[in-house]
Length: 119
Image 1 (tube, rainbow, N blue to C red):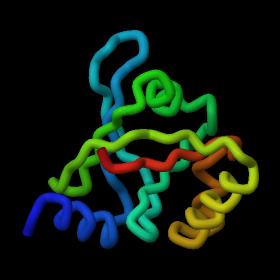
Image 2 (tube, helix red, strand yellow; image 1 turned 120 degrees about the vertical axis):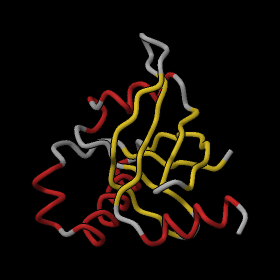
Image 3 (cartoon, rainbow, N blue to C red; image 1 turned 60 degrees about the vertical axis):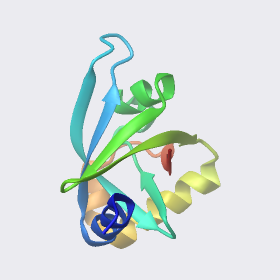
């Protein structure tokens, strides 16, 4: 199975991925587990503290991000979503996948989202 097919398979089956971004001050790679929504071949990310989230700030400055879904990996371009209606649509997708209660519990600000586009 080609790498992209493995990544698509893993993104369609799992609830969490490892996101790596380049630090805007350190210049070093920084990784963290994040929730995501994979729909119609697109990966949506929702920063837990909205535009105040450190990985989001890093991705704004260095938009090439790396996604690892249990060993299947790829580089993506982080495209910020700032339009309120589009952000709301992403939030709804997260509520559908993870449940309204958990999204409310873990996410504190809903002013931005990210579309991760394959490189």
